[in-house]
Image 1 (cartoon, helix red, strand yellow):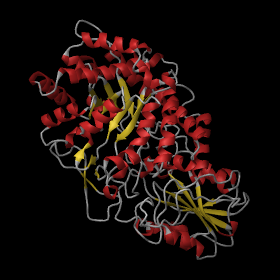
Image 2 (cartoon, rainbow, N blue to C red):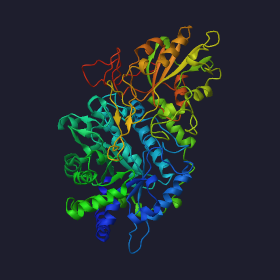
Image 3 (spheres, rainbow, N blue to C red):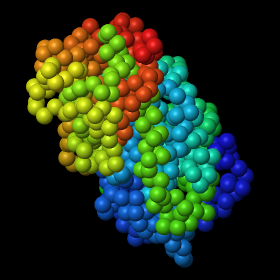
Image 4 (spheres, rainbow, N blue to C red):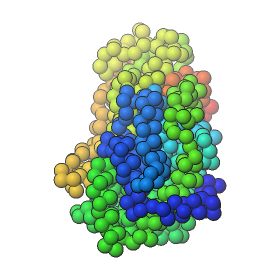
Length: 611
């Protein structure tokens, strides 16, 4: 197993030999991970930095694979400089490739995890991971902050769509297989995985992002830790700490979670990284925050801008004894062993790697896997009078704000952090409407607001594509009170950045009244409507369900919208089953794991054309 490679005597000896040659400055440099906009190749060389990353939306040049390869080559070359002051230690470059290489123009963008959970197809999952790894490698990148192993227990949480399921068993069953396919046994076809966010971020009270997980240790282990154990056993090399707290104590400073369980009890031999400026919440004094995090067990620090301050503070702590040299050596040894185990020292420069700028990036072969994933993720919730499948020669009106909007169907973490609107940014993809047009020659796209051009003399049926706008962490939360969100770390930087949540209710008719209006405008004319909902979570849709003849949960399907047409017009049957309970009866309820709320549709529900 890849994880056992970290215990290989040869790997350990190489790491120890290298560690013995390193100065304190070089060691602290290896513990530093910063954003590309804050660092030059010369900085990487002179400060011995262990890693560089692209925050979501941070891209070089025109955001093509060749731009990424050139950028990574410059950083790599700088890190491999060796002279009397420097050792050649290759850096890791990290990205949030969480549903395909979703940062790059022209990439294959897969359904978000909530859709893959509904598909519940292990072979498909492994192929998704393999394609993702290859497209990452095509850009010269070798590390992704994925997969997310959160068990989302409250759909108010804005990151619900990053979770495969509210059910621990489903998430656990996926964890190991995704890791093995993504890392590809640490061969040339794999990248370094980073499982996240350790631990319990899907179990915060009221689903508040970065909130508190008020659970006993037994509940935390049973519900939220199990997927991580499976992933570690499968060889996961890195782990990211969670912004959330456990019973009031921040995970980034939690020695019991980061060291006692992960490293001592479980024997995790890789390294732990912080999330984006994640240590900033540990103390109002940044100097104290650095010591708290290092001593708790963070090995590499994701510092967006002030990385030189981090280096200075950590060096001062070591000199004063508030952080031991032994702890520094442990962290750096872990980082070196991961780089050695992955074969990073033996790789050629990015410009000369076999996968760099590979023609398979965004290829039809890769997109066919994503199209299959879309088909299998769709869940049929209603099909009155067997309206579906539609005949390919039917005169179908296609309406709704999400019908011809690739940005909306991809969701958050797509090209930019909070996602995009429209079709321009997601190159090479197919919107829902474009997919329908390819198979149904008599279909037409509504040209008027709310489908006002629906005409029973011209239209046999309608497909109305509704749902949410894109969002990512923080801005995706549904919070019933008048709560605002303070962006992580902003208080230390001296400016409080306030974010507004997505809404105050899970009821779609309140969040997006335009959707129900569109459905009713069409159905009141006597035209039967198939409703396709694009969303990052189940929502209360009682009124939309009642107004429709058929209803499909399409989640956030990604770039290959023709996968929806494949099923609606009968080339394939429905396959997906709910991996989350679906709230109903107008109740603004959490996910159905809470027995006090009877779900409208239970987890595991999903119709087919045969039933």
